[in-house]
Every structure is written in structure tokens, then in C-alpha cells.
Image 1: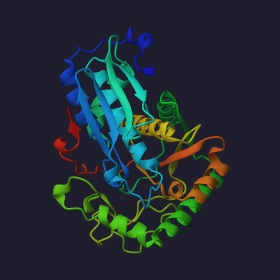
Image 2 (image 1 turned 135 degrees about the vertical axis):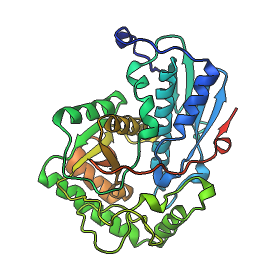
Image 3 (image 1 turned 45 degrees about the horizontal axis):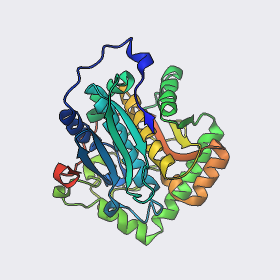
Length: 338
């Protein structure tokens, strides 16, 4: 059990007005539903109580080919959990979070309780950024974050008990590129992977989920990116330019955790969203490319060659790019109970 308030920092920041518990929890769920998830699968459910919130996995939305262990599913739920924490802080509430509280109920990944005390001001300021955050697969320009910005991104991961490893040297860039190319080729040779990808890139608009053509590059064979983006253009109608501009000179970050189990995956999702919101706050765009983490052999080699005692959980590219639109979202009634 961990308290998410920071009394030592609250004295320097005006405390937000405290909304009613019902209003705060309702807003927290709305923000949680905007979290990033694997293939925009949105694999979460929420149960609202008078003084708190249960955060659950929705196993019916488990992508079993790309994510057989459910690592990315749990990470997606962790990102939603972080959004809920942020919004509760913005509405004036401190919270206590229990992660993986019930061994008998593996779908119950977190329980949040509203408690007395000052909200975390560092979280509260991120609330306005939640709807602005986008996974951006557009072409990135050649600019790179400053050392100070990289330190702020790293601090966001550390605040959630995770580690952020910048990919700095040419050798490290080539390692990530080589492993991503290898994993991407292995996935594209798997019929089950291709069938699953097609299902999540051809959803009916009313489904409110999946990857839409407007958000992915058109694949025409002309892209020469050293680090390939996943080919979401399964129907040939991708609306973005074919190249992401993803050469090995671009900024890449690897998010990792000291352990590798369900709670570590959940915390890595919280850390990922904290990093993504901090990146958004600094005016940068970000996009994950996780192929090399989805094949056990390439993930192991990435750990051995780059993160050492840290288990890699996500890989991000950072840059400046044109805006991208919002992705579809499920109906609240399909996600929230209580």
C-alpha cells in the first residue's frame, strides 16, 4: 500500500479546490479512458465506489498473438491508472493505491481510495495534458531534446519506480535498429500475428477502438527507416507519409523496471504515461515501437546489450512532428460500472 500524496511539496503550490468525491471519481474515469494501449485495444474496466475506484483488466481484449503473457495489456491498464491518479490530484484529492491487491482476482490490478491530505501537485499539473497526448506516427524532424529535457523525462520514470535509458551511442542505436528489424520480420512472417493485426486495423467505427487509417503511414515500399515502424496499413489506405523519418540518429528512450512480473508491468505503464505526459508538456511528440520487446529472444538481447539489470518494457522515439488526431474511444457504459 502506498500513499500518493506529497506533503513536502504542497506548501509551495496552492492546493486545488476539492471537488466532491463523486465528481472527482467520474472525471478520473473519463481521463483514464484516454490512456494509450496496445493497438488501441483499451483493455480496462472500472468500478466506481463512494470513496474509490477499482481498476481491472478486460481479458476479452487481450491480443494473444503479439502479447501472449499479457505484459502489454497490464502495461496499458497501468497507463489508465496513472491518468486516474493525475485527475484525482487535479480535483483536490490525495489517494492511496493498492496494486495487485488480490492474488485470487488477477484481473483486479489496482484499487484507489480517496484519503485525507494534500493532493500531489506534481501530478495535478499534468491533468490538462491528458487529452492532448497523442501517439504520433508522423515523420519526425531532426531536432533532439536538450539534456535538461531528457533529465525531466528520466525523473518522470523514476517517480514511478522505473528507469529510463536514453539510447546515446551509435552502437546502441544500431543495436535497437537491428533488433527491431529482426523482430518486425519475424512477426510479419507469422500468420496469427498478421490476422490479429488485421482485426485491429479494420474495426467498424462504432467499435470505438483499434487503429484508424488516418493515424498510420501509407505503406508503399518506399520507406527506408532504420528502425521500422509497425506496418498498421493492412488495407493500403494509411493516410500518413510512408516514412516516419526514423533513422538511427533520432532520439530513442528505453523504459525499464528492476523486476519483471505483473506488478512491474503495471508500474511500467504508470511510468510510461508519466513520461509521455512530460514529453507532451515539453512540446515534443512521441511514439512507441515495441516489436523488439514482443519477441523473447530480441528482448533478452536488448537487455543484455543496453539495459543490463533492468527489464526493458517500452521503447519510444521522440521528435517534433505535425499534429495527429484523436483515436476512437469505447463508450463509457461499456467500461464503467458502479
